Image 1 (cartoon, one colour):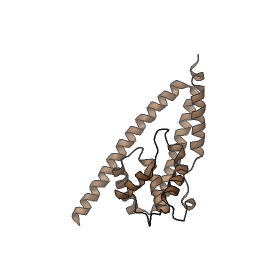
Image 2 (cartoon, rainbow, N blue to C red):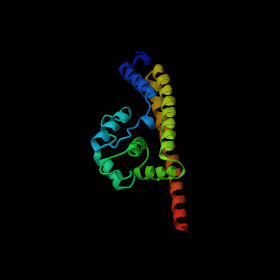
Image 3 (cartoon, rainbow, N blue to C red):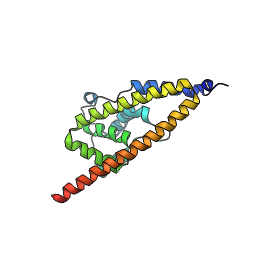
Image 4 (cartoon, one colour):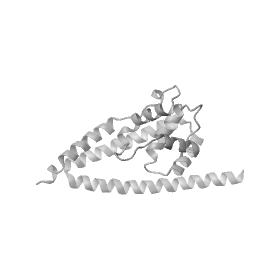
Length: 188
């Protein structure tokens, strides 16, 4: 049996996934609800926002998670149990980054970024980086998929190594940012 014909159903589902992801865009800033939402509405909105990124067994967001993010100061307190656009934007970023970074590291990173730009600019930059990265990865997956199972396995290994290296670098940078923040606070 030739290598290209093995696992055709998986390759077809993978091709479908890459097509969906490469066409998918996170909700643009101006398309977030301008009205305040209750928790169940937030969860429905976020489920639609993040559906392509969820794994079968892991839910990216629950009401308990949101409450913990508020309690830990990662997410601002809702106003009378209602959440606004800023909350939804922060939750989007948080849910996508928590697959790679710890919640305290995300908190440090977001605090550092908010010192230099507003949440709208931060979200726009985040979306551009997310879309560019997924577009590039989807091209690599499609190329490997057309070459067969072995090429896909090698790409999975390569992406895993890249992911680990990028995560380590991001964590190191965040640690440095945190140290600068601590030193600045000590001077005051």
